[in-house]
Length: 285
Image (cartoon, rainbow, N blue to C red; front, side):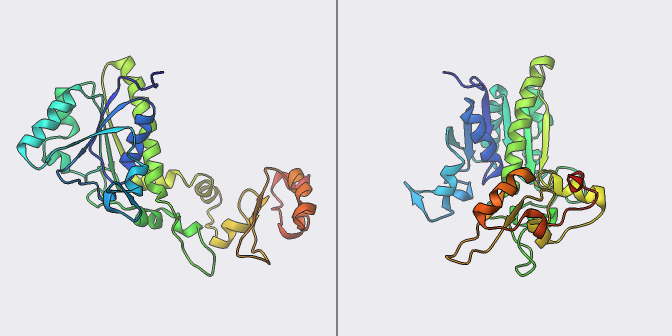
């Protein structure tokens, strides 16, 4: 059975995680994804291991399934012309070069959209293509620190901690896939493509969701320990086990269910260890 994106051709010039993750999703949905690398392989994750299998790292294979692969030297005039020819028949082009790099090669949106007005062009950078930080490269570790993600992970003893997975890349990859799909739908109405300008930093801040909303509403920045014991959801917490090297966690979506769990987990009733803010609607229940 054909996928939802059957017949959509994606030219993937991205490397590492955010872009490849997005194009993998598009490929899973049926798109024809052509991954472009420099001769010899320019996606660094090919070599991020161990483990390796058939000369490729687990990291690389995790986000590059359902793709065809070609090599093109983008720094050469011949390679740049190859990309122009491929862009003429592509539906989507995605890249994550630093701001201005594609324009230097005359492969920016303005140049390629003249060849193919229906092209959807997705640019992924650290901080977007405009603004004072636009020239800077973006890396998940740095973005997690700048966006606030590290400040809400860990404990008072550990200090700020990075989330184990490169979540800012994953968030951005998801946003990219969603934006591209929306642009494909818009093209059905307008007949024209468009440019998508995505920033790792923007996507990371957006993914703070209720934590960011709490700050905007209250003006208070919560501590790392508060993220574990006094979040908006009062029926969740992690404890240190007295046996074995484990940290059990418990969560329910409301107080009635949590109260029923207390005898099983040998926990005191929720109100005994989890003060409920007086302004909360459930404080009066």
